Image 1 (cartoon, rainbow, N blue to C red):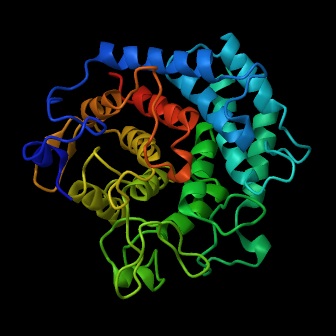
Image 2 (cartoon, rainbow, N blue to C red):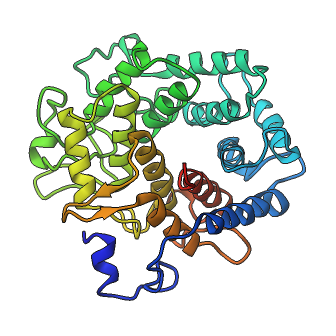
Length: 367
């Protein structure tokens, strides 16, 4: 994987990707203009009368859209946000979860819902709802209650719901949601999650004694070590699980949230993998699949890491906020939306891709 700066010097990419003419960072006013246009698209063209976004797939996209609107500058008391929040709260269940009845993705929906509730809880009126939802996702976490002790690869992870196989994507949403509402990094649920996250890293050692990292010890992260292991990027010839960009940023972010420091071997290995594969032209290891999820996860992770520049494996220092915002703004459609031509993981849906893009841009504005 070539760093973006080297590749752009050799080839002019198609307009759907980052054009070679974009050699300067998107200025703050361009980012704000893109946010304004994207927010207007969601509110004026996509939000249903009842407050939902993409209601046919349940409440999660609405939760993401509401969070994106508030994080990128729409006031929490704006009519569109209040309608979206009311729609989201209509899915509140007696067990504290926020999900569609019978949903197989209740943990995912509740974790995403928690992020929206936290963004909108400006007066404390949602405190009880937030606590109940947090207790619910903790209850769904794989732990001793399922007979899965610390030695089991599933221990500490979170899946979509109904005790489905845990994976890093759902686990990182759970960890982010709990930390966003103020849960301590030392909370047992966070530390259990850290055990699972560590086992999704291709780093042999005391934190991952599964067979996978020995077969591909590159320091990146994959989807899950549970139920025989899986990577969305596929396997190596000898059965190792390939690392890829979105999960490596997800793993890095989750470790930082769990209190792992920058001098920890796990963080160092993750940063080394990301330095080797630094780019905002694609989701490394996955091409354009999950590109906007990758943008969002990378932005949040680098922001949590607390760095303004990122040095790639060639020693080139990158102002990542500038480069990421340039990549995202270049992909915005005339109507204000974003959409991935690769429809995997629903990114062909403009509501979802636009929410991810707005969330990513919210971390790109100057601090």
